Amino acid sequence: MMYVISPLHDKDFNATGEPKKPHWHILLLFDSVKDYEQVLKITESVGGTIPQKCISARSLVRYMAHLDNPEKAQYNISEIVGRGGADVQDLLKPSMSERYSMLDDMITYIEENDIIEYCDLVLFARVHHRDDWFPLLADSCSYFIGCYIKSRRNKYKSVDRNTGEIYD
Image 1 (cartoon, rainbow, N blue to C red):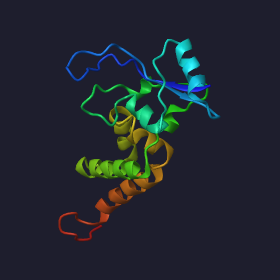
Image 2: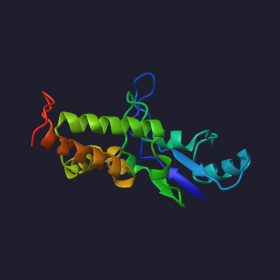
Image 3: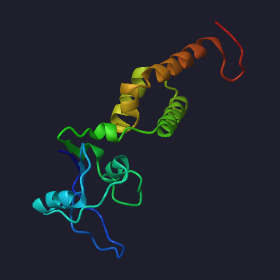
């Protein structure tokens, strides 16, 4: 059986402002349909609470770190653990609109910080954006961003950015 375990949620508060009892969230993933009684047997065997049907595995895994809830305590996604073949990174892959938004953020950073070497962006992403920019650069967006930086670097050699005058 595949499953995903959240980091220990030990910084959460209830609506009255009191700390919640430390707890974990666990996502059970099945290859076939299971009825409520079958899942209840599993959760009871490990002392879990009443199981709830999950509509979106991706949303629940994001909730495990409160990624979409900035008002809540933030947990490190590197502490979300997949077992039995559950691939946390696959469940956390950004949507296309999220990817384009991150690319836009990278371009803004490149422009604002006068980045003209790809390695400078990668090193920055590795330290400051390990969970969002870095995977995009490592897996699929290197060509686009690399071409943008190279074009930017070459542009400085031939065009005055302020006047647009071409020079050698």
